[in-house]
Image (cartoon, rainbow, N blue to C red):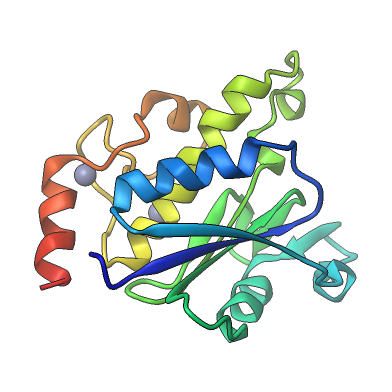
Length: 179
Ligand SMILES: [Zn+2]
Ligand SMILES: [Zn+2]
């Protein structure tokens, strides 16, 4: 997989160290180099006033259209509430076998569910969502192995059940796809 470089494009303020730690984890999981960059994208262009949320598909297309020399895969990171028309909200999404994905920590925060803030838990959840979306760009579909990071997650509790790693089956699919 050494022909891929991934760039995480951060929209909004993230805790210092948070993104660089995630970048390191992603680099280990996919055995490629990972960089972090900040973006000044005006998110109001993606706001849907009737839902008071941000259009996930438009954002994904925007990320996909960015031309960043030296990087084959681009993952947009957000703090805002993302939706697609058929779902109440999404944690993230990606182009299958594509080059782009998005993820937001908005719905990953304990505060959304009436619980006390937990930075550490938030970090683990966000890392799993990002690794999951990158998996789709490598051609992985949802996996049925209970603790595989590619298992689908509807609720935040589903994310907590998973590890942040690909199972060996998912790993071997990527290896074949990348041959
Ligand atoms: Zn998925
Ligand atoms: Zn798996």
